[in-house]
Structure formats: structure tokens, C-alpha cells
Length: 167
Length: 294
Image (tube, rainbow over all chains, first blue to last red; front, side):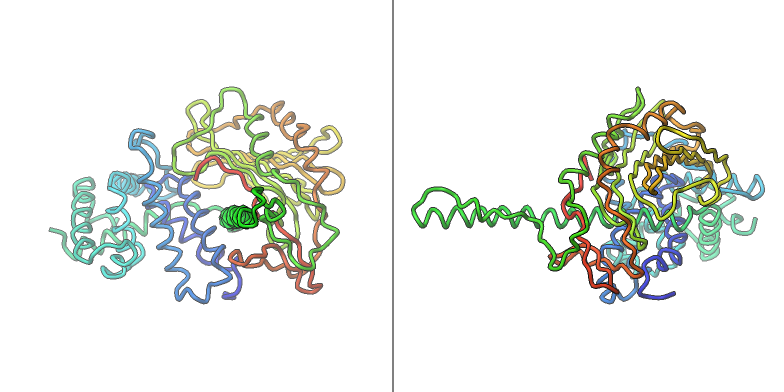
């Protein structure tokens, strides 16, 4: 990728950002597109100064997560029902699709910070410290939120929690 | 207690779920990013311009007061938009307020029963005046609205632009829906539809005129359950040929034929597009953005 080229950055990172947004929004693909637009739009404004950004991909991920938290906090919980918002992921056997949908539902039911912690830790493979820096939390807060959120997901998925990746 | 095995399984599960979502076209992501990025730049520039104008007016008033005239020095309240040195004179003067004009007329052309979807934390209605879209020298003005209609949420985008080539069923990116073309007024209406993401369809209509100018109407449902355009065929024809867009079309600057247009940094006092081979600057509409909320 030509580091000077914003379209190349979008081409190389756009799909990953969109999938991150899909996880954060619990499968709301419209909001996911909005988040990607906001994130890449902010990156575009900084592109002339990108040499000051050590890690553009990481910067974009952090920007997206913070935009997501900001938008979710500005939304009233009563403005939009959470049931049935998510879109159906593509393909795979029925059992796999059911498991994915259950997982997406479980993410949607988490608080925005808990969801962001899980996405950064387990989708982005960020360390506890990196996650804490991105979310402006302490490391202990990240650990406790991560454990709590995983417990909630485990409750929702039941026995499928362990078997998910093996199915 | 969560075990390491559970954590590993959960990571794999997240990857499995994330990778099951169909990704929009890279070109669409890029275009949306550029639009949003320019909105942000213009808003920053507008904020700086207003601050500068207020400061200048205040300074003028203070100066006049000190001189004993008692009248603010109106000559000091210069335009907040800086004029780049060496601006290309062949670019027509920008119509002030075009962003608002675009947004208000999009609002006026919503189908009966549609209402703006406000309170989401995102702008429900916004518009932008002429700017160069992308690196291919096309000038465009656009507006977008997020609306609720029949219990569904839709994004509606209108873009008035001048392309290198008219968009036809042959030149448009292939979509999995039908593409039709028919004469309409002084141009041709090209209508196409296709799937963007999981169960999400976009309807696009292009009213092409002979010189490459076009009015483009894009409609996307936010909810997968929406399977039809909120505009009827007749409403689409009325929309794209509405007199509101005619004056915008007539004022469109010509396509800039420059192999290497480079945007100026939004932090600079001068913003626009520089054609590197010729050294000519094409001023952008710094402050002409209209938005209801962000």
C-alpha cells in the first residue's frame, strides 16, 4: 500500500473497520456504515498530517470506538427498540447462523463500554493496557468489564459459548 | 469464572460473526469518507471564519470607539472566507448558501408521510455546496436526509454533478438488480438497484443531461425488512427533474482536467484543490455546509 494514498488506506482497512462497526452496533449495518463514514471522514481530515500518527489503523479503530460510544450515549434508550435491529449475517449452516445471531444479540445487549472492551480485546487482539488507553480506562477497569461482559455473553450463549468456535 | 479456553473460543466466535457480514464496495466507503471529511473541514473552517469575523468586527468597533466616531468600522468586517492567491478565474463564483438550498429542497421533495429521523446523534439533514468530489475533478453539490417512512428508516442522498461520462447501464458498476434507461425531459433517466450488505438494497436513479451533468438520487433502507423504494416511479421522475436542481445544474463548474489534484490541508487558512501540473488553485466552498444536528 502506498502510505501516501488515502484511497489505498480505505481499500486496505475499510472492510475490517466495517466489520468492527458491525460488531459494535450489534449487527445494525446502517449505523455501522455511519460509523465507518464518520471514522474515515475524520481520518481524511488528518491525512495531510498522517505522519504524526504512528499507527493509522490503530488510530482509526480508536476513533471508531470512541465515536460509537459517543453516539450510543447520546441516544435515548427509548428512542429505538433494540429487538430485531441487527441484520442477518451471511451464509453458513443454520446452526452457525443461529449462533452468530445469538452472539450479535448478546453484544447488542451490553453497555457501550463493555461491548467496546470485548471488541477491542477479542476482535482487535488489543492488550488490556492498549484497550485501557483507547477507552481512557484503567487496566483494572478493563479487566473487570471484560470479565463481566464475558459472563453475560456466556449466560446468553449457554453451552454454545465454548463450542462456538469449534462448530 | 472465564477460562482461557473460553476466551479463545470467544475470540474465534467474534471473528466468525464479523467476517459473515458482507462489506460495502470500497468505492462507496471512500466516497462517503471524503464527503464526511469535507463536511468536517468546512465546519471547522466556518467556525474559524465566524470567530475571525467576530474578532474583526469587535476590533473595528473598538478602534472606532477609540477614535471617537462611535460607529463600527464596517470595512473591517471582511469576508471570513480567505481568497487563495492565484485562484483559477474560470471557476464560476460559488453561490452562497447552496448547501442550505440543497438540503431544504431535498426536504421539500420528501414523499408524503416521510419525516426526518432526528435525535439519533447523527445529522438528519445536511447539504453542501460545490466541491470537487474525489481526484477526478468532478464538481458536485449534495444533500442527504435520514427519514422515517412507513416504520422504516431510510437514507436519501441527492447529488448534482458533472461527470466525465454520463452514467449508463453499461458504465455503472454492475449491481445484482435490474438497470433500466428511458428518455425523460431533456435527458435520460437511468435507474438501477442492488444489494449493498446483508439484505440491504440501494436504489439509484441518474438523470443524465447531454453535457455530462446529472442529478443522482440514492435511497437506502436502514432496516433489512424494507424491500421497496420509498419513492414511486413518478415521484422519482418529479424529483430528479425538479426545477430546484436546474439552477444548480446550470451553475456547475466544468470538470477540472488535472491528473493530480491534491487537497490542501484543512488546518491551513487556504482550502481548496491544487492542480499540481499547472499550479492552479480551485477554491472550495469553505463555509457552505448546512446541517441540522451532529
